[in-house]
Image (cartoon, rainbow, N blue to C red):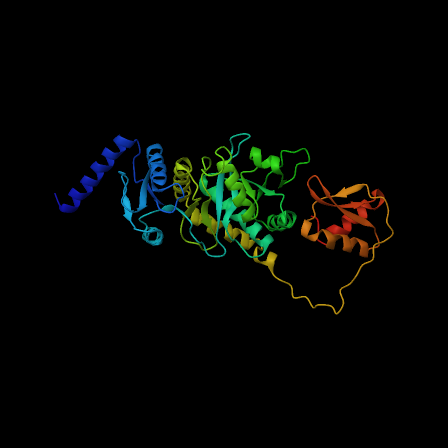
Length: 384
């Protein structure tokens, strides 16, 4: 028997022995975790890694950092800077399919999609996004966050994830932009609020029950929500719930790196490693590329082209028409555009007021003017 045949026979024997021991046949997905940087200490991270390995025989958990008392395989590194470098090299070489780490800086355009367990129903929900910066423009960032969330959910195995937009500043503008993509052929399965008035713009109740698979928000709000969902049972200094802040997603970004908080406890570390293996197995990078290809085909770049405007010598001042009683509400206008929308209607000679309804900003109009005001606001692009 040749040396090559002997080697293949030995590999087959080892695979069979491993399968009999673990119940898993075939190559396991190698996922890493950097052990330094936690406020809870190295032992907490190692404990989380060991929990992940014990619960998930289909993955191979690898520690990245200094020597520790553990049977898990290790990639050596002696400080945080070295461990990030070692992590990146292992990802580039293919030695690791994904890695979980803390305090890692992504380039502009990359942000993380977190995954939480909602308290009201125990339902999993993706938060898009939780760290990083998708774009410097708020609306553009939220639209990209939606794409990031959809891609991550699909890589996790949800074929047609539902998408909701949290009712924060620019939510309505982001909703209109996403609806334009849908009109141009990009597929988005919008969620419905659990509240009676429905709609894809989500409220606090929807956060608690996990109304959508993917909740779109700005990154700073997402970051706060991650901390609350992860540590609301522990007092805040030890994160016990959820799957961490998630993988960094961006168009053309070529590594699967997931983020933990420095306050993440062993249960979250274990879940984050499981999350890493799931999206690696689901070909996350390829799914992201496919989603962006579809979004660009639907005119993603055209949504955010900046128009060059010639400044007038004097800004136009529109005087308010004669005041009248306004009893009807028109929702769906972004808070950042509310005053501009009012000015457009005033310019048409119709009096409207502004207010804040239970679902957000509203234009208040007289009953007899309602249809005309809706038409004006629709033509001006303030409502869909």
